[in-house]
Length: 313
Image 1 (spheres, rainbow, N blue to C red):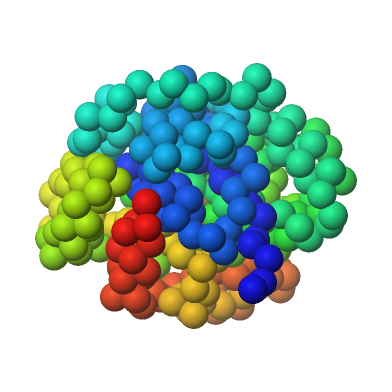
Image 2 (image 1 turned 30 degrees about the vertical axis):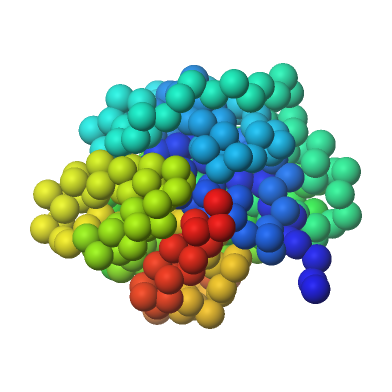
C-alpha cells in the first residue's frame, strides 16, 4: 500500500469547504498534517470555529486546527454571508466545538511544518483566499522549493467571475496574496469556476448523500441545500456548484479532471478587473506556464467518489 499523501488544508468554511474537509477526513490516501483557517467566506473567528465543528462532526478531534490571517495582505476583508449565511455554515445545527484551537499561528505552523519535513513531502490544499500561504512565502521564501504542489480552488476564465464580472471570490478577496503564490514557482494545480460550475449538486445527488443516514450524511445534505439556493437563483441551474471538494477529489482521482499547463497572472491594480485570473489558455504570450489549469470534470465520477467516501464517516 502506498504511503498516504501528506497535506495541509487551508480553508475558510463555508459549506463547500466543509464538504471538502469531510472528503479528506474520509480518505485514507490523505494524511492531514493540520488544517489552517483564514478569513474569507466569513471572518476568521467563524472560519476557525467552523473548521473545528467539521472535524468533530467527522469524529476527528485529533486533527490540529490553526487560526491564521484575520484580513487580506493589502485590501479590506470582503466576506460572503449572502452565500453561506451568517455563521458560514448555515443549514445544519452543529454544536459548538469543544476541541481546542492550537495556540500557534497558522503561518508559523505552515513554515515550521514545511521546513521540518523533507522537500516535496507536503501538498498545500487551498480552499479560500491565499493570505496564509502568501504570508508564509513572503516571510520564509525557502519554503517554496519544499512544497510538493499547491492544489487550489480559485479563479475563472471562460466562466468569468462570481463576485465581480471578472473575478472569482477567493482570488478577489486577496489578489495580492494570489499574485505572490502564482509567482512563487511552486507547482500549482488550479480548480477554477470553469470546472466547479460543472460539479452541480442536483436534487438526486443530495438525496443520495442524505440517504447515507449518518450524522455526516444528513448534515452534508442540509449544508448543500442551504448553499445551493443562492447559485440556483443566480445561474438558473439544478443545484449549486460544489467548488472546494474538487481540490480533494483531484488528489484522490486526478483522472476525473482535464486541463492544460499555461500561465496564470493575477490583476492587482485595476479597479475594473481586480482579482481577475488572466489565463493564457491559447498561449498567446511568451509568459512561461506556471500552473496546470483544469477545465473539465467527470461530474458523475466526482459525486460517486464523494458519496462513497462520506459513507465511511
